[in-house]
Length: 385
Ligand code: GLN
Image (tube, rainbow, N blue to C red; front, side):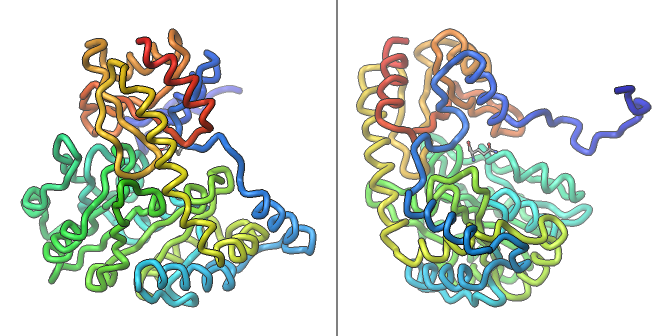
């Protein structure tokens, strides 16, 4: 096709195809074991699939309500109350979204305008900063502290200005797996008290924590919750990343603005799946056992790597494990990730892509949401590098 006159001014000049698409494509091309993009390689509950089929076959095939199916929002309200002792009204404080990424984009679009500053912790999941920039805002980066990727709240305090409109937190954290403690939440509450800062709390891995850690949702901290939008993902919790369904919690005044944007970005979300999810999550067993399933996988993965040259500390949450390869090579992490895929046939995500200045700490992120045989095959290779 002839090219449109070459005067297109990109709104995201520094951005190419995201790293997950890139590494998954490279992995496929070279027939590698794909531990890069985060998605499980095992099935969704057959019961859940049969519920989806059921709701399709009885005719829930037209638009769902804009804010989501009420029955699902009620089930979420009950779940959140049971987990975090917080009351979110199904009618006005919960919205179903097309996954976490859309929820984050809509939330940022609803509140960020020209000149607003948004504090983002690095390494950071890739979708926050572009959403801020597309809305005219300015990301302000604060680096998490080695070796456990903790937040230094005194640094946050230093970068807070009159223009700080939002702080994005992510616990458990992608890509590092770090989890925020209740003390962190108290600090954040103290820092933001008396300001009009909004907290965007990405909690999509809320059900994947190990070693006795408990998820410190913003919802547990009423003063913080008042100023927060909380983001969740059924894809992560129910191993169905391809369904692209999640939800947002937030006080009525915030949710009103969120929905104004949501309705024009997606209007409404997949209808039959929402009915199926409402039934499925009404049984808490369907999400409470997930941590132990993934903890076993993490332990299996790390056990097999004990004798390898990779260094690590076991991830406290998410289904990602960082491995330090500095004793193997000096190559930068992007190059090493490519070589690992092409030569050794295992793929992972280079962590430098999650830093705004591509900080290379010789770390790769591996997704262990895989069947044992996949992990066994991958670790067999990694052990011998
Ligand atoms: N959240 C997934 C990950 O971290 C990827 C999602 C995506 O591919 N955009 O790997």
